[in-house]
Image 1 (spheres, rainbow over the protein chains, first blue to last red):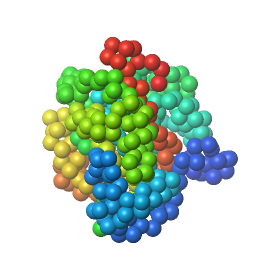
Image 2 (cartoon, each protein chain N blue to C red):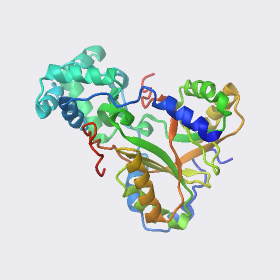
Image 3 (cartoon, each protein chain N blue to C red):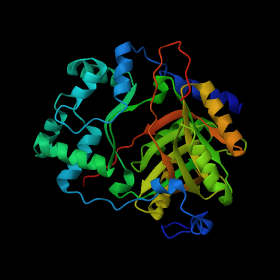
Length: 184
Length: 185
């Protein structure tokens, strides 16, 4: 089985010869930035123990041995570099009345750019990934302000792409944890 | 039969997920919190100014929204490939419906798993449990999935490796008053 980074990528055969698609801009992993032990401790605390107090960075600074201004400086740098992708509230969309589903499509390589563009144009599409192996190679999440709106968005995507879609709504959540151990 | 199970599971998923009551100030706060917190000494002050509340009131309401589950968590979200986890796979599992709860709980307990959901099936796609797993390379993901399969006693599964991220965007929630019809996103 092709179980390493050198493995073949479906669509890459033709992908290499085509002009770079617009969505390539969000594609590639960049070099991880070097982080000191102190940076890692701070990142862990920022993820799992952000103080809900008027001066949160001062509190974090006390815990890792940095001045408040220095914590602010580092956080701002990480926000700019993209290492810190979000800082603040992560909402439960269901409790705000939103409904979502995971959608799978089997897209022929020659139609990939066009179909991805049409899907990504739908505002409720928050994540979209090319996966292998097939037959279902495109997997995206669709969120809308209610069940009817969700179905309408699915129909719009079907109409725009002419693709048949598998909609796989969640029936039970066991775990959602986007925190990563960076220290140790 | 299957539809009934899905409905039952959905009812369970929906239990306690009704919309909590939000007042005008909550809605203003939720709107203000869609943007990232600034890296300034008093980061809640601009949020408070935006929604016409005091800093203390903002903090108290954030705590309340956390308690009500409207805010899932508060803090930083990192780009995982920047912390060295460059390979990831969505592992799809086919589990007997009566074992779903047990297997889901077991698989979710693995540290390499970031997300674990049960999902509806279709005739073309019989997998009913989904886990996102992260590793340093694909081999590590394969090994993790093997360990998970052995631990949970599931034989039918597939790893769908992430080849490329094509979109990753935060949704801006528009919080309507109860009874208000949802507008176009």
